[in-house]
Length: 335
Image (cartoon, rainbow, N blue to C red):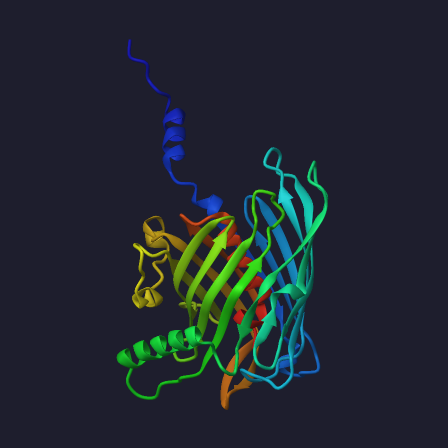
């Protein structure tokens, strides 16, 4: 006698065969208030939320007023506070685990010491209390970019000039990571992620170009791609970031990977290995801001929502990138 399989069982079998992309997704929220764009004696605040199936984290950044330019003769500072909770996989309960403190200071030459940010791990279950720190360093908007950042910048400008005619805006912002370490979010199985490489923002294309590597709990990922800042089609006062970072298909990855266009939802399940994502920014209260002698319209109020998703990249690495974007909200979303 032939035994028929119930339709519900067939559906369960089919669902089990689909890769669990959701488990590699980190949801991102950010609310920015930048009164310093009108009065630089005031402080700007950025409230950031990160959530995934294992961890929920909230950061609050309080930053000194905008300086109105890529580089300033005074140090730029942002205080960082926050808390994180682990999610009990058996019942979904949120259990407080991490407390963040400290901040970051951008020296006049761009040097930013990661060790100024600390994390305190609360005792949970059989795991005792402990403490840790971010470490390594970053160079944020330096007067004299590093050799690797300069090479990346030159490669980007060369590509832009080959495809555009007329006036080219050669202004760029750069971020360099030098063993910048984002510590574990509180899971003993995770050892944190160490970041190296460069990110360059081109004012001509309004896009971040990224050539970075990260090593998380012994596994290394080399990531290359871009994150353009574009107006959301047919929606007023709204922009979006579309992130495409790919892993090399072989031992080498050409500069062409820097200019790969985001695939969009239609190609979601055919996406290349790496990290992709989208962050929608609803903007209001625009202010004219002078940047290196040119005037840009900048939103002083922003409500951002989105997500980052990894394919053949660990959830820890995706979360770590989310932390970087979050603690550098002034760089990615501010003036």
